[in-house]
Amino acid sequence: MILSRSRVLGALLVATAAIAAFVLAEVLRTVVFAITFAYVLYPLRQRLVGRGLSRRIACAASTVLAFLAAALLVVPLLYVLYRQRSRLIDLLGQIPDVLVVEALGLRFPIEAAPVVSAVRIALRDLALAITAAAPRLALELIVFTILVYGLLLRPGAVGTAVFKIVPPEYRDIPMRLHRRTRTTLYSIYILQAATAAATFVLALALFALLGYRSPVLLAVIAGVLQFVPVVGPSVLVVALGTGDLLIGETTRAILVVVFGLGVVSFVPDAVIRTQLADWTGKISPGLYLVGFVGGILTVGAVGIIVGPLVVSLLLEIIEMLSENGGTSTPVEPATGAPK
Image (cartoon, rainbow, N blue to C red; front, side, top):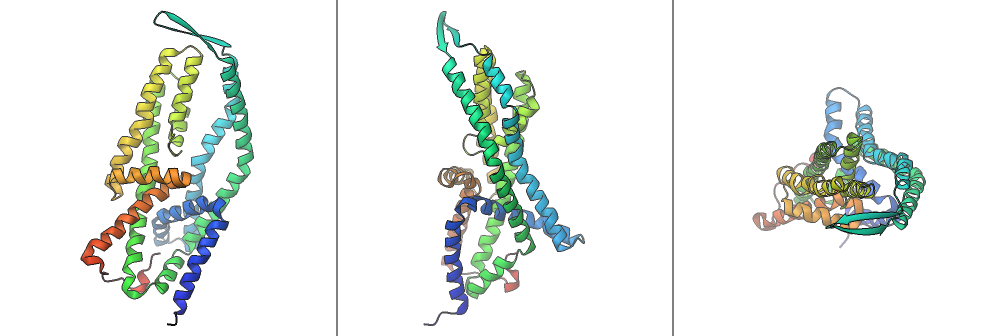
């Protein structure tokens, strides 16, 4: 049997993609985020073109939006951590070497000097790590921007290649997977933005009620930390509680840990995220959490996107298998390839 040219090229494409994934493993997460951002920004690009802008200008405007969104996720947190380190170190210097905690009429001395020294070293190392990582992060941001622009400029290239390889009777399959991918990615990014916004509002209210200085800044940090896998804003809550405990604000330390972990860290993930997942993503909250947590534990930060997406595509394939015994449905013309 002689293989067609398109099938040979398809096999070559798969093999080359596998090699590229291995060689480019260090920037693979950047590539994945760029592809997903391009998916989400494509309707904006189309709307700008429909309003009379040229294709390149529309792509450039959409790419600038992607650049700003990506920068806003990383830059504020790194800036705050780097700029505020000296204030934190000064605060640590005010902590006595021995702390005395009173409970139930008993006094418990706690040796604080080793802990303070360890935290100081950690802050110094963190500042050095941020400084060292800045060039790499900037380079990844440049790669991200270039990829998004290229994908938006020629969005139909991949779809055209897929439709040339896939036989006509099976072309409904990539079309349905394409639509499911687009819907799921919209949902994921909407969920992330909504959860971060809810975290900001809840954190602002809590920190203001507890009398913290700069509650808006702390709330911004909490919202940004919502994008950090697993730990999220709980890191900030525990840090604030520890700081209050060390300076003698025992009551506020207990309140910020209890209500911070319960309201700021737990409520956005367990309530808001799961409810919106069921409303926007056509995927149950339970399966969304499985994909979210499984993706994070397996592939790291990019699992925030990849985990739920894989679960959603799996559900779509199961639906196709259950429809008419897995027979194909009428396909759209080749011109309807994913753009």
